Length: 257
Ligand code: NI
Image (cartoon, rainbow, N blue to C red; front, side):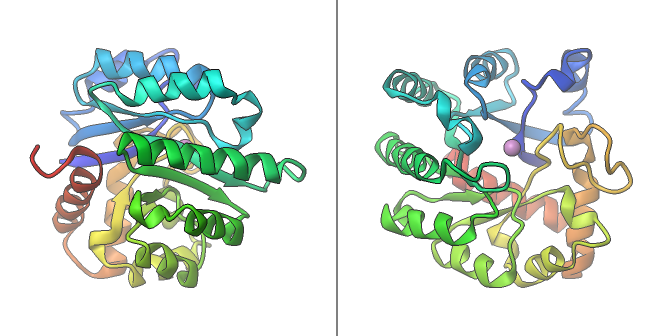
C-alpha cells in the first residue's frame, strides 16, 4: 500500500472533514501516514492524531520559519515526544530563506540542535530546504548528517544537489510538484535518482498535483504522483508503490516490522 511520508493533518484546512477523510484513507490504498510537525501548536496535535489513528505516525520538530518559538523548554518537549512509541522522525527541520532574509543564523543554530537531538534519540530527520541549498548541505555535513539519515522533503533542487543527498545516504521526498508542466528540473531528478532513494509524499494540505493544482491536497492524490514517477522512469505503477513503501519502512519503521 502507499506510504504517505509527509502530511499536515493537524492543519486547519482539515477542520471540517478530518475524521471522515482519515477514516477513508485505507480503502483508498494509503496504508500509513506520517504527520509532520511544523509549528509549536502542531506538536500536541500530532501526538493526538498518532494516538487516534493506528496508521498515523509522528515526526516532531519545528520548521525553520518557526524557530523563533524554540527554546530549551520546547526542545525538551520535542525530546519527550520523540520517545513516544509511534514517533518515527525529527521534522520538519532545516533552512528556508524564501521569506526569511534576516534570521539565517538562528535557523542554522536550531537546525543543528534538532539534528543533534535526532542523533541522540536515534531517529532519522525530515529536512525542509528552500532557497538554501548550499547552507543546508554545509550544515548537514558539519554535524555528519550521513550518520543520522533521513529525507530531503519536497525535493526542489537540481540533479547536482540530489546527487549530494544520495551520496549522504538520504532519500528524496517527491510530491505533487513533479506533475506540474513546468517542473522540468524535478522530472530530471526523478529520472536520475534510483527508485530505492525515493519516497512518496504530498505535503498536504499544500502542493496538490495536477489535475487538482491550487486546491486543498490530501493523501488521496498520491496515485497521481506515483503515476508520474512511473511514466518518467518507465516502470510499472505498482513497482513505484511497492518500492517506495519499502523505502519508507526501512527509514522510519525499521526492518523488523
Ligand atoms: Ni511540510
